[in-house]
Length: 223
Image (cartoon, helix red, strand yellow):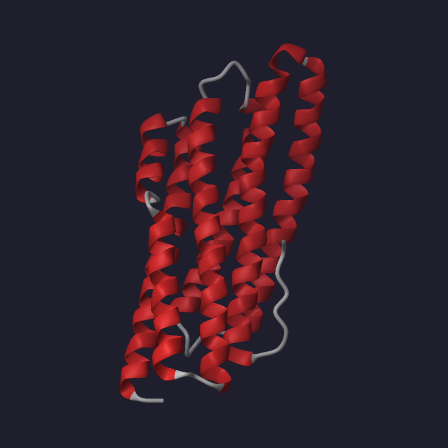
């Protein structure tokens, strides 16, 4: 492929990297906001992820232009297909982080007592942040990254995340039974926490797509 093609690919990778970095940082900010019940910090997360869908559309447009201009084949084609799917997963992750910040800001000032769940929520959130960090590090070190190792690390975080969410779900369901007057609020909290669980699922998808882009094989994505 020509030098112009590689310039295009580097531009696309740079934009994906920036998007990943923004979402990872926002997820960390959201974790800190929950630790301190800081509404201003939650709002900062929302601002960081403003118009994230448009940024994803911009990357998709660049990818489609590259298809049209260069007609890539073999590995180049595989990489572009992976990047196109990856952008969708990254944007949906970011949208999940934004919604989590919006909702948790409200939950921390509601009548629900989140203190009994706080240690588990923090661990749940840390696993979603860790998974994103593994992906970002690997994506930025394309030549050095061990893609299979990164995929395994993300899978470990996702498995831990699933276990933590299952525990929280059980505990919150007990609260719904015990505090019927707040049942709707607790159901909403559970829905917000599911955003963290889905974030880890999407991180597995992204790690799988990164591995596919470099090594080929089969794409396996969570729904």
